[in-house]
Length: 287
Image (cartoon, rainbow, N blue to C red; front, side):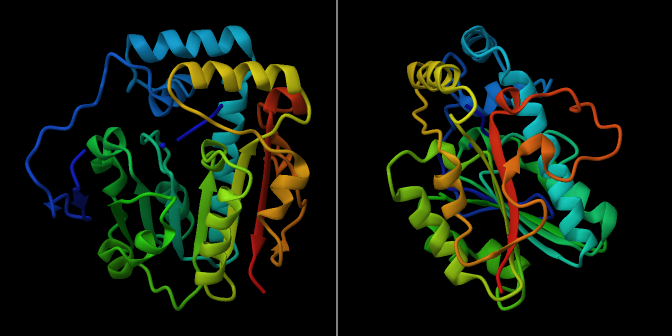
C-alpha cells in the first residue's frame, strides 16, 4: 500500500506551536510506520531500520511498490500544477505524510506564489517534521493542522483552516494515497461526501488510490504485508473509486491509472504498466 499518514499541537506559518501539552511524542522508531515506508520508497531519509525492513518485505511480495509510490507522487505534482494553472489558489491536503520536496505548496506556489495551502494529518511523525511544510512563498501562506481525516467536520472547523482558507471560495482538496488506509465498505465514501458537501461550487477534488484491478494477487500480498506491520488497508476497484467523484465533473482524461493522468512529455514512467502503477487517479470539479 501507499501512504503519505500524541500531543495535540498546531503549528502556523511562523513555526510557533499552540494548544499543546508538553508531553514527549513517542515516534515508535522500533516499529514500522507506513509514512516512513513511503518516505523510503521515495528515496527520503526519514526512515529507520524497522521501516526499511517492512518496506523490504512489501517489495519482496509486490516488487512494483517502489514504482507505484513514485508514480503516485508524480501524479500529485502534475495535478497540483494543473489546478494552479487553471486558477485554483486555495489547497487543502489531507493525509499529508512526511514532507518530501517538492511538497504540494512548492508546486502550487511555483505557478501562483499567492497560493494558500493547509496540510492536515493526525500523525505525530508528520507533526515532528511539519516545519518543512511551512516554508511558504512570502506572497502566499501555508499552515499545518493536527487533525483526523475520519472526522472531516472537526478538520474543516480547525482554526488553522479557517485562518488560512476562505471556505466560501473554491478549494482544491487533495486526498492522495490516503483513502486506501480507511477500510470498511462505506466509511471512506462517507468521508469524501462530507468534504464534497462542505466545499463550494468550483472546488476540486484530486484522489489517488490503490486498486486490485490489474494484479489482484499482488495487491492482496501487499495489503497483507501492511496489515502484518500494523497498518490495515483496503484496495478498491474502478467502480468503487469512481463513486468518490459522484456528482462532480471529471477533468480529462477522467479515471485512469496514476502514471497516465496528464503525463509530462518525456516523463520517466512511459514504460510503466497499469499493474505496476497499481493506483487509480482522477481530478474533478464541483459544478
